[in-house]
Amino acid sequence: MKNNKSILHIVNTFYAVTYFIGDQFLYFKDKGYDLHVICSPSDRMESYSKSKGFKYEDIPLLRSISITQDIKSLIQICRYIKKNNIGIIVGHTPKGGLLAMIAGKLMRVPKRIYFRHGLVYETSSGFIRQLLIFAEKLTSCCATKIICVSPSLMKRSVEDRLNPEYKQLILGEGTCGGIDSEEKFNPHKINTDKLNALRQSLNIIKNDIVIGYCGRLVKDKGIKKLVETLKILPENYKLLLVGDFEERDALKNDLQEEITQNNKIIKTGFIFNDIEYYYALMSVFILPSYREGFPTSTLEASSMQIPVLTTKVTGCIDAIIDGETGYYISHDPQDIKANIIKLQNKELRDKLGYNGRQFVLNNFDNRILWPIIEKELYI
Image 1 (cartoon, rainbow, N blue to C red):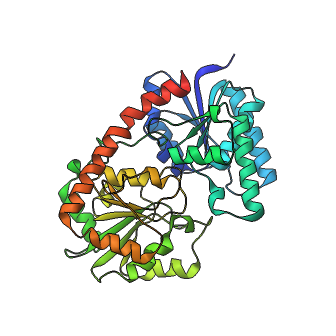
Image 2: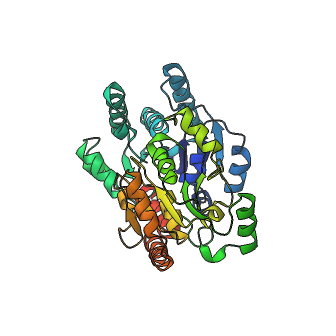
Image 3: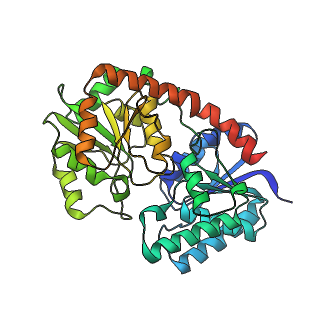
């Protein structure tokens, strides 16, 4: 008989483990759950697992298709399920979700939960698009429950007939677990000396106006549009990119080179600690994405009382209240510029920022979402 207190999360990268789950591990450990993670190898995982109280195993979970490696990984996952008497399996990301749900079905795990964090095929075409749709349908078929992380993602899933409507649900108003708006993403808890030291280290001077972005530096996120917008903004604007380049959906080499060499662009790489201080440097946060599940970065920015500009695509459309916490933008650099210039008005920025924090506190704080997760998924 399977242990319904034994939960296995399957995630393809270490960064996703911290981003999608994070302190949930501590919350559910305190409630008596036995927590496990399968993830691609990372030298950070051992110390992180000890700090959060979960067991783990390194198993390669490639983002790309590799029949041989995927079968090997599937067999290893099945063995782990059997060895640890897993009663609840939770799959994240397309490849992690697919292998998790197939393994869970094969091993007769009673609760098989797929977190749909987005739809990669929205920006794909041709054979690749059809293959990705098929993978989503197969994952959904093997799952007993599908969590869509935003209302628009849930709507799109039904429209594209990825799964029966009765199988899917949303946790509260969305996201995969909310954010820590009290202890971490709280502008009132920022240390001024530490913030000034960071500002100095990044060569941000007094008259600079910082427009910010946090996430992967890839095509789908609209990074090219941010760089194009910077070129038509006044000289005292700087672009803060908190994230790093990736091979999948990679930016063209000339754009990567421009980002690296332009002294008006600050590229930090991935930040694992104190990311709230980078938000605190921003006057406005911009996400000109072409697709999302639910962009947690917009909530982090709102929680830090930063006004948000984002597109009206899947996921992003749920992340702000237009005219109250930020504004919708198109992918036209002139439109993005006009909205940035509008936010030079400090009174307007303060109003949108205050409303944004209230929006997060009322709907997306992790203290609201975690009890919902237990009720809807684990009990």
